[in-house]
Image 1 (cartoon, one colour):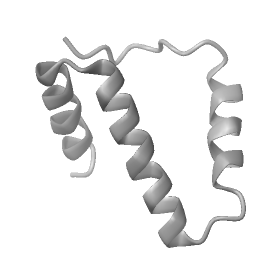
Image 2 (image 1 turned 90 degrees about the horizontal axis):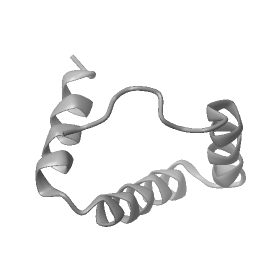
Image 3 (image 1 turned 60 degrees about the horizontal axis):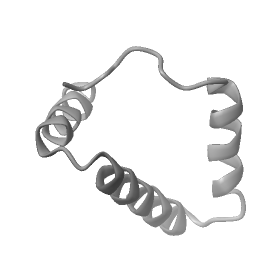
Length: 63
């Protein structure tokens, strides 16, 4: 089951690290970095049902 409750220690610190990782990247490089990050984290999660729920939740948030 997908956990959507806050679950990151120091979320502001993590967000700052995420933004810093993108510094100096072009828009295309930033998009590629995000894609690699998604694939790395998806591999770490590994559970296809959880990943399916995450895909659905991300898509629904765009509506």
